[in-house]
Length: 112
Length: 115
Image 1 (cartoon, one colour):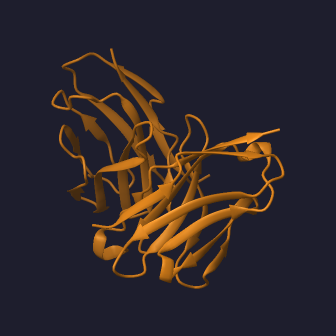
Image 2 (cartoon, helix red, strand yellow; image 1 turned 135 degrees about the vertical axis):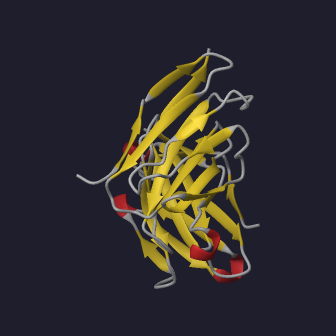
């Protein structure tokens, strides 16, 4: 079955550590996205990529980094510069204009 | 910048009653519009989408939405609520490829269904 796989489902991080969230898709979609979800705030865009080896900052990119070396993969690194990283992170992909985005099951990151 | 406003962060309905979730967008051109549903600790699932083919859009699970350009609205309705409709619902807008096909989301509306 085609879809988007995020791993791990739950992640715990100590303050000052970098962590990387995995996102893999087998839908052959060009565009991929990372969103952050906090209670009562909807989803906010962190980074997006429309093509391999290219990506753009979203609305809340500070403290995050991404790479897009393969069409199927779009990992997100939460760096120690992100002051409030505890949140639910969602990865999505889309085939193009006017088409819906497909979402993974999310990774819940908690700073301990 | 485009924005999406969902009126009411929480809505409570009785089983069998009408479900109405409101969404208004700000955009200088007709955008692409979507409604998603999210169950606890899960990703988002598409309910329906508007892409200019028809103003009344039917989706999954008995939901539908009407695009009203004059009101810049895209409200979601279901004639008869079911217990399984309890979830959080998000309205989203995209301006297409020129804007990276990015989705901008409203703040979400959590639906509680009372027996």
